[in-house]
Amino acid sequence: MPALRDARVTEQRNPRSVAIDLATPLEIVDIITAEDAGVAPAVATQRDALARAVSAAESALRGGGRIIYAGAGTSGRLGVLDASEIPPTFGADFGLVVGLIAGGHAALLRAQEGAEDSPEGGARDVDAIAISADDFLVGIAASGTTPYVHGALRRAKSVGATTGMIACTALPLAILDAIDIPIVIVVGPEVVTGSTRLKSGTATKLALNIISTGAMIRIGKTYGNLMVDLRATNAKLVDRSERIVAEVCSVSREAARTLLRAADGVVKRAIVMHLLQLDAAGADAALHDAHGVIRRAVKVAPPAIGGGVG
Image 1 (cartoon, helix red, strand yellow):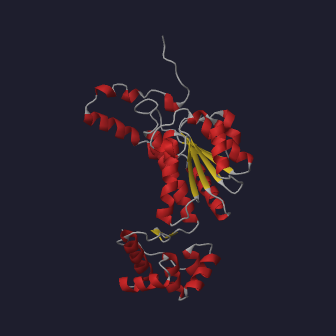
Image 2 (spheres, rainbow, N blue to C red; image 1 turned 120 degrees about the vertical axis):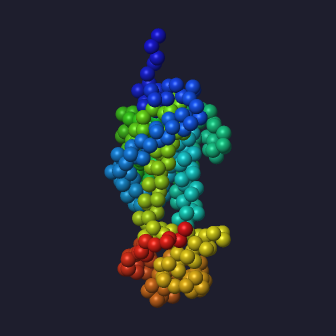
Image 3 (cartoon, rainbow, N blue to C red; image 1 turned 135 degrees about the vertical axis):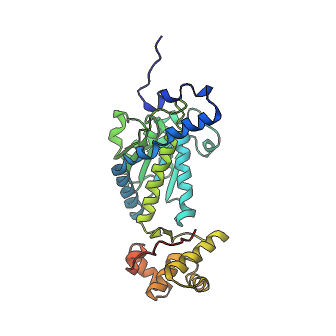
C-alpha cells in the first residue's frame, strides 16, 4: 500500500536522511549540518516580506501599539523567547513585545495536548491582552495550519490590527484573507520527519530576530550597532554602559561614569548630553524631537568600527 503523502512540506520525508537511524554520530552531525546550511538562504528569499514586517512593527510601536506573537509548540516557545529577550537587550518596556502560546505558560515546559487545535483559544488569548488596531500580530506556525494561530489572526484582523504570519510551507488559501504580510520560508522536509523544531525552528528564530531587532533599531534603540538603550541591571551591563559612552563620546572611563551619573544611568541621555552640551532635560527634549534616534538628534556620524565594546 503506498504511503499517504501530506501536501505540507513540513510533513514530508527527507530523502537525504531516510537511513539516519543507521548513521554514526559523525554522520548524523554531517547530515544535520548539511540540511541546516540551507536555512539562512531560505530566509533571505523572504527579504521583502520581512522588511514589510519590520516596517509594520515599527509603525505599531510608534503608534502606541505592540508586537504580538501567537503560536503553539515550538513556534509558540520561539515567540515567547523573542519577546522575553527584548527588554534586557534594548531597554524596552515589558509588554511592548508579547508572546502568546497555546496552553499558556505551562506549555513552555510541558506540551499541552490539544491546545493548538482550538481557534477559539487563539481568539480568547488575544482578547485577554486587549488586542487593538494599533498592534501588529504575527502568527507563527511552521505547518501553516495551526487552528490556534488562525483564531488569533482572525480576531486580530477583525479589530483592525496589522497581521503577519511565519510559516515553512505554503499557506492554506482559507487563511490568506486574514494575513497582511505572509512570510513563507520553505526549508524543505526535516531530517526527522515532521520535527519542526529543527530547520523550521531555526528559520523561525532567524525571522523573529530580524523583525524584532529591525523594529528596535528603527525606533532608536541603537546608535550605529551599539545597544544604547540597555538597562544596566548587572555588573556586566554597567561595564558595557561605561564603555559605550566612553567610545561614542571619546572620553575616559571615569568621565563616562560621571556622565552616566548625571544622566541617571541612561546611556542615550548621557551621549546626547555630552555631544550637544545639554543638561538631562535638554537631552531628553532633543531625543523626543528626534523620535528617539540619537543620530538624528546629534547629527553626527556613528562611532568608527574598531575594537568594539564586547
